[in-house]
Length: 216
Image (spheres, rainbow, N blue to C red):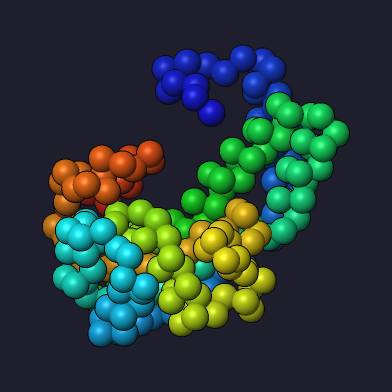
């Protein structure tokens, strides 16, 4: 929300956060689907419609993975409807905060899938205990947004009511999708010097990679 880590939110903002949190708990219906995919099959999925940036970070990361899994997750349509309703009645502040909270929750949902998938693999002895996992989504790290089409064709997340429109936007809006890449921590250590990195408005990869590289 643009509030620095070194600043305390005002009483008004704190109140909005509390209200948004309550609405999120009331209207969210989180669901997810995950499916392992072989490297050869993911190569075709990643290639998509031939619009990926090259060279690109993900292009050099996924071929070194021990395991790959496609995933999609959503908070459900109820949250999106509540956000729209708040804006419609002119409660823009609460609508904005709920929208931000829902975006954070959707991102955390993808991280939950990543952690659970890695724990399952390690628990079965399928990968060494020192392996790490990160998720990568179409639209980031050189993977063109049109890659959603091949991903959805393979994963078929309609069972959790996620749809894809002609411009590759997911519905419900608070949904996430991508590939989980499991492997040694070193494969995720890519310097952000690629062309797509310069154009990226998120630049959250440092924080995400910092999480898996931090000592336990």
